[in-house]
Image (cartoon, rainbow, N blue to C red; front, side, top):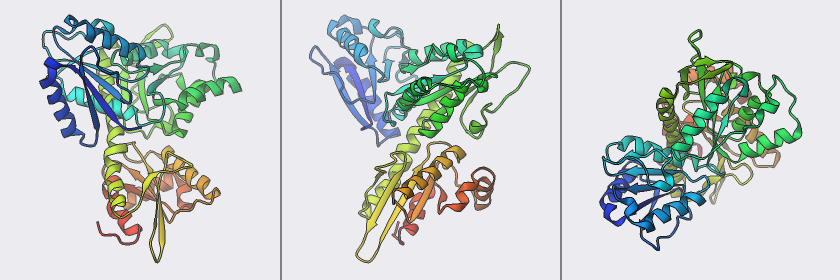
Length: 410
C-alpha cells in the first residue's frame, strides 16, 4: 500500500494547508501527500493511509463541508482521522467528529507531525490499521477501557475483545475456536498495546496474543502498571523485557483491578505515538537508503514472495550471481524474539530451496560493537550461531551490503 497522507481543507484555509504540507515534507520527504479542497463536489479519499482535516472557526457555516465530513467519518472504517484547528479560539472539531480530540496548527506542530508519522507507521502492515488492545479482564478491564477510549478519541480504530471474561482463567486450555478468533484479529492488527498488569501473565489468552503478535512481526507497546508497593520498570512478560519502548505507570487498585490514572493518558500516548513514529522511520526512511542503493546497481529489493516480513534481492551478472536476505527490524536495538523469527524464516526458505549468499538482520539506532553483539547472540539468540547471518545497524547497511554483494562502490 502506498503511504499517502490526505489533507482536507476549505479554500479559505489554503495557507494553513500549504504550511502543513511544507512541514510534513521537510520532516518526511518520502511521504506521499494528496490534498482535497472542500466544496460540494469534493471526492472522498480512496487510498489514504491517514486523513487530516483542517478546520477553522466557521467550518459549519458551509453545510457541504459538514456533509462531506459526516460521509467520510461514517465510511472511514479504520483509517485514522486527525482534526486540526487553525483558530486558537476554537479547539473542538465539527459536529460529525466532535468526539475526537483536535490539535492546533501551528501551536502543536511537533505533536501533529508525530501523530501523522504514527498513523503512517500503522499503515505499513497489510491489515485494517486497528490497534489490538490486549489485557487480562480480572485486573485490567478498566485500564483497557481507558486506553481504548483515548485511542478512539485520537482518531485511531481499535479492537478489544469484551467477551474474554469467559476465558479469563489461569492457564486455560484454549479451544480451536478461541485460538482462531485471536489469530484472525491479531493477523489484521497493525499494532498491539498490552495492558501489562500483575495478573496478565497468568492468562493463556494474553500470552497467546503476545506470542502471535511477535510471530506476525506486529509492533508491541507494553503499558506496565504497578501500585506503590512495587516499582516495575520492565514488562512482566519475559519475552518482552528487552523491548526498548514501553510506558511504566504507577496505578491504584480499585477492588481487584489496577486502574491507571486518567491524568497519565496524555503522557502514555505521547510515548506510544513516538514508538509508532519510530516504526515508520525504521520501516520506510531507514530502509529507503538501502533500497535506493541496490536499485542503483540494477538490483530489485523488495518483500520476499514467500515471507513478506523479510526482504530479498538477487543480482545476476555476466560472471556471477549473488543474493541477499534481510530482516528489517523496527525495534530499537536488537529484539531477540524478532531475530529468532528471522532465523525461523531463513530455515523455512531453505526448505523451499531459497538460499541466500548473505543474510542480514538490520536494526535501528547506534551500531553495537562486536563484543556486545557476540554477548547478545550467546546469551539471547544462540541459534543464530549456527546460521550464516550478521546483525547490522541500518546506518552501516549500505556499506556492509556493498562489500557483501561483491565490492560495489558506495
